[in-house]
Length: 539
Image (cartoon, rainbow, N blue to C red; front, side, top):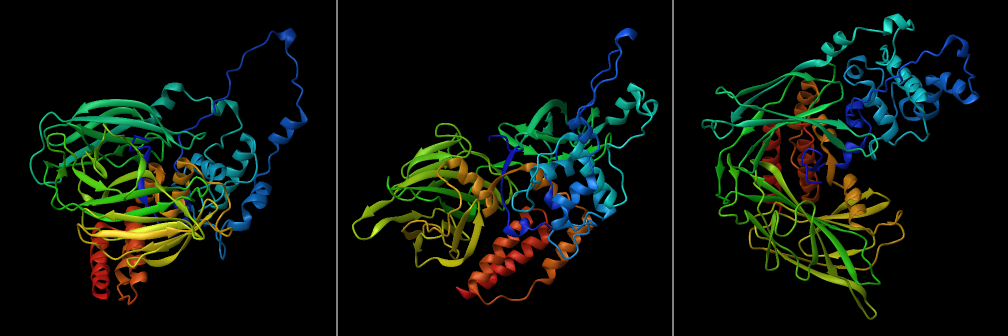
């Protein structure tokens, strides 16, 4: 959980769960070759025809079209077009050409949360290959795995095959603050492969090189195997400047990994809380304990990396009165986090960006049972920094009462229905308070949820999540023309909204779209400023 490449906090709208395109459905997988075992030659007198079992015969005769019709056509239609249905268009040759077989295979087997369920069948390798081949054929393409039946054609020269996957990883380091780059910067290159069993990414190699005087660097003759991900980073006295991960979409194709470096400062005056998310897990009414997760989304609008001064915390957060059993998503007291009276401090550097820094904290609070009233808690938390909004999500059935909150709808995840509440902007030193009471209703429960891990999984579809960075950055790396189309949509969406709840939803949705890479920075900032102005006028 400590690797920012493996796991990154992101805010994603539930609208992303719609199965609207293959790119949105897929977590980029690894290069997962399955070489055939080496053949051994038996003596002539021992050679015998192997008996083919009924099971192996069935595997050999796997029918990709039949499998597709059985498991996929309900959403994608039998012709793969998805027309008038919830599935994406699998007949778009241009789009399909950008996704290797392994990406499609990962989607079929793993699904993508609420966006697309995994296939409801235990497919063997032959069946999966046949299904992938049929999906490829829907767009007029051939499967990566298809080859000439002639064994002589398949037997290629080894050295030539190796040359096909070798390429260069290059990059340019620029100073986002505007000054000169420090001398003797070292680039570390990390190579990742997707683990199909765990769904995570594993480091399979690391390399180092120096940054040239002109800011360029190069790693020559790297194995650029389709499906692998590459990430470069600079560790400058504990401040990590990283590129975006880049996935290899074709063997041997060179990739670029630019990095933006920022000069350091300890001036925290411009920091603000973009959003404070407060999530309630179903409380334990018998033991009178409420389990809560808070996510502080911090913005640094400056052009400097904010670093601690004399090992002091950069930002300090107060928790609600009565918070106990405090734990963190990454780090601990005495490590990244410092303990202060009533809360904690964070010493991690904060790079420039809107919502670029997140802190996830878990804690418990007394959920006391009172005669004839039931369980309840009084939640009072001091807001240390200007905060655009406090967003509260509680399982359906819990009553959330506060003069500062407005109910803004329901969201479902992991078998639970959460009711969302949001506040207007709050100034520094303000106090946020609410009362939470009752118990989760039968309508809200579908699965048992009583652990911190389950809460994290639940947050995946709710908005503030720990997401494999492959999904997040893969969405950001869509084709430029798609991004331009999305920008036009948001630029055209400039009509005034006369409802505070709708404005809050619009701001949250805009933030989600920006984090997913669906809109450019310029469009995002302009639209967000306009929405915030409307919101301030209403409240």
